[in-house]
Every structure is written in C-alpha cells, then in structure tokens.
Image (cartoon, rainbow, N blue to C red; front, side, top):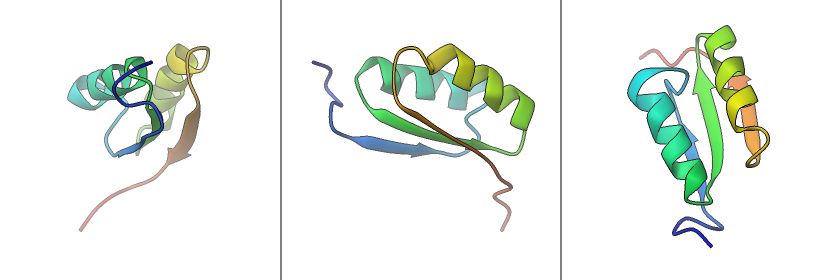
Length: 65
C-alpha cells in the first residue's frame, strides 16, 4: 500500500516537466491521478506511460485566468 492509496489527485499542466514528475510520483504512491494539460499529445504520452499502473483520467483543457 502506498501513502496515497484512496486519494484522488487533480493536476494541471501535467504533461511535462514538474507536472509530469509529480503525476508519476503520486501514481507510484497509489493515488488516482486526474491529469490535465493543454498539450493533448504530451498528455497522451503520460497516459500511455501510466495506464498500466493506475487509474488515469484524461482530459485536454486550457486553464487561463
């Protein structure tokens, strides 16, 4: 069991860099990761990387304020 079993994590800008590393780290600790990013192709790469290990929600969006 991981430290984050049963937790749901929502990440924006998750397709690359710190966001990607964070998504992977949370997934390894057992969290369900909801990863969002404007870059759909990079997000799909992350999804493919994680899909065999955990439950992943996939969505492409723009988070501008």
